[in-house]
Image 1: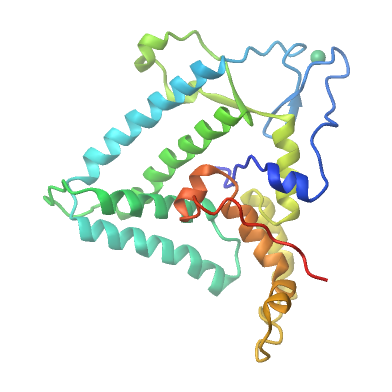
Image 2: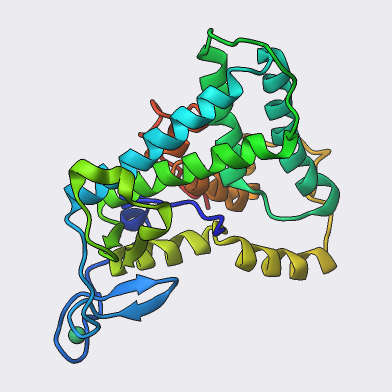
Length: 273
Ligand SMILES: [Zn+2]
């Protein structure tokens, strides 16, 4: 699973002076290209049929609702406190991984835990009839739902499209299987991903490679930590870290809500010199 934060990052596009209007169309026919796992394809020359956005949203929503219903029915049997502590512990483990092994931080995992905590805390109809038997599967199952929600948002904002792999009937969505949904990324989104990589937000495999190299020359994380800094010194010293978190946490609506940042979209960071 690609552990990547999916953005529609207009403000950062503007701030960094990078813009997305110099896209390369297909050399043969001039169509806008699409990407499947970073491989470029031409919808015309490669004869790809894209599902209309409204249909794609209906299909993804169908799966979100189905999975969510199954998930909630399953966890309702559990003890609420046991479930909450399990999710808190999963979140803790993600961060401890970073501190103990200096590995990339699974932001999607953090977002999944946060969203699950928020939703579980609001639920009041637990039956509390049994203990959680398969402890590993709870957060993993919810991750699938969060991933679908992210894809829904991406299709909504036009970062991704859905390929027509089979005939479908919007009135018979039950006939579809999740494997029938194949996403393609737009070229604009490919550009956004490259910008995000500059801020160290990237797919898991790439992040691992980067940190494997960094780990070899690991130095104290907070240089000069005995000295107190004013606001501008702090920002300068931690600019790379701050902009990484900013890029990662604000990268889409779902994450903003997961990390409690929904009302903070107007924050701006200026690099002090
Ligand atoms: Zn073409």
